Length: 164
Length: 397
Figure 1 (cartoon, each protein chain N blue to C red):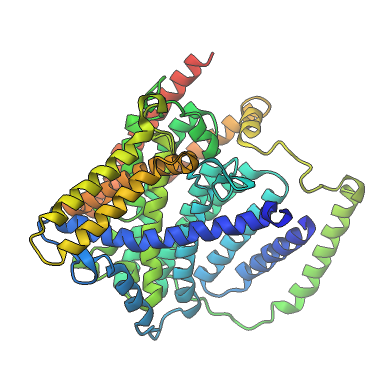
Figure 2: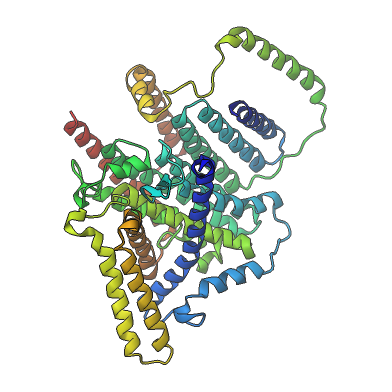
């Protein structure tokens, strides 16, 4: 059951991810990205990380992607035009080589004996995440928040109108 | 016996019951709203179909089902069709984690009056409601209509902005209850009105409740925050181009969202299905008392009827109310009927607030709407959360 669900949602995630790239209209690409986020959330849920799954949907699918779509709608961006398909000639073999290499190295780094078991992991609740964030990972957590603060201030400075 | 106890069988039964009750409530909420607004404005409201317009929802449903389903030209067809589906799915999905009452025994089966209890139930509702924005935003964009587009843009901007103070307002009572499961959330508030999160120390969550309610009005696109469908400037906003059942989907999604946020406010702040004071002081007699008074009043007006048909309708309703009052006294059903009564009463009171506000308040201007949330509501919610978390940390040492 777990494996079937994993395969279904992994397939959806991959198909949506490919769709993000090949769609010509920005709205379709953005919606495919929402599909990727959603199926990733289901994969987290299957692994027993329910808090991460909920946060994935709230933050990425529910907030960031809505803003993406909002901006696309606001700017009224139309479909882009393609210039031929000549990029496929070098692209397709390179992609296959790249995927093969990736699969090979992942196989070598994580052999089958230590594979993740569905339902084997229990520490995915909000309490465990909170404890981990505020003890083991306190420094990275705080540094990340300062990084985000810097980005916000940067955006405000760039967007501010000069008052004469 | 095997079949009765199986998880799937119980879940299907519960889903069917909840779906049927929810759909009926959605239809009749519309009737109640029209009646409430009508009485606020001193007019009778729906009156023709059935006694006091009681069959009006049925007529509305038939009208919506039989209307011509138009597909306007030049729309983005897949997204145009996806949008109402997305809106109604996300709206109905969140009902699945809302607990209506405690554990009950029906014959041989013991079950919770809730479809499923997630240990991140609150986050689930937030996640699903944040996905509901897509339905509205895409409807506005795919319709290929300037009014719909502006309605969709306004609504997505508004919903993103009000989600922040709403989440912060939700976080404060969660700190006090120390859980994310909606079922446990209610159980921590047992034992009378002073244990409810709205009044319970270390820091009573009244401010948080008010912020949550304001944000809930904005999230559900209700007056005074109904700019996405402001008739006088945007025709009908994001659903201008929709007709028949597709329009009904948006309509049902809005009312279903209203029920969800009202239920969420009940669970978070008002103690869920818990009675306001213990049974020892007679809280179990309140529903009987209310229905008995209603029944006697209806009987009195039936006897002294001024119009001909009131001689029939009033006594019938009076007897129905008296029977309900009697049912609340039966010890067999009291264990599950009383919690259900309190849950419905609290949720209903909040729903009434929605209608009351719609009948009385004018609409915001758009810049006021955005300024209000970012400059006032968000800092206020933040401050409330800070004070609450400080006091919780102080007292639980």
